[in-house]
Length: 343
Ligand code: GZL
Image (cartoon, rainbow, N blue to C red):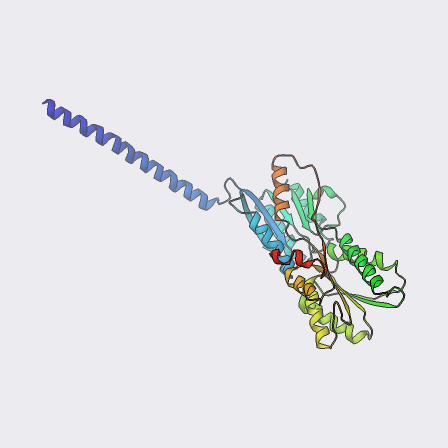
């Protein structure tokens, strides 16, 4: 009997825990399935949901800017990123922002293609209690409480640096008295980068009586338009001494048009070539002497956005304006950075 009893007890000790474990396992399995179900229905569970409205993909700089954001606002870093490319249309950005509001995201990050036309939609975001962080470019609005922070470049400083470089270069070449004819390829009309770079360069130009800005034309920050506008300048003006191009993509188009016209540029060329952005493909041309100077504009803004959001999460944001660090590259110093350039 005892033996029989012992067997039953052993069986019970074996069966109960097993069935209990089976039940638990089943329960855990069920819980897992529910969690899995929930996470499929609610992928942003426990993550900071950020809606990003990007200008477009018009330039190498913009591609690097987008990469910096997408490589930082990852789920591993605690974010659920909803990214919208507006294809260079403000109405697409406004639609995207309204979409983010309807999804009740935690933050909206916006690179505004132009400065005006944002008051209404940013008021809607504020009414919805969603903080807006501006990146790259600025908005021209009545009430600056409509955005919580801004991260970007000092574009006016960039424009001035181009002017200061030209002053120094012409002095070295003993060309401070002769007429200097300048044409400017501008980027997207009404964008902060164009407004600032133009204002900065003009502020230096007006101090040099022998400088003549013949014309400034919008080439929309693209290579194709840069080529077209440079062709127009070459047909319109016989004697161009300096080309200022407000981003490297337009510069590539302008260089192609000048090469086709048999005009050399850069260090020992017919035309002085000044560019902005300092992407690697352009720095190669600085190194080769085809571009005289490239004014850096830093697209790596993802980390700044991450830090701003982290500080806001802790209610610790103390600043509103964050400026990126930038340099001026010439054949003399480009070698220091070119190999490490990731874009
Ligand atoms: C600058 C950015 C400009 C770049 C262009 O911050 O707004 O837009 O200079 C880009 O390359 O298209």
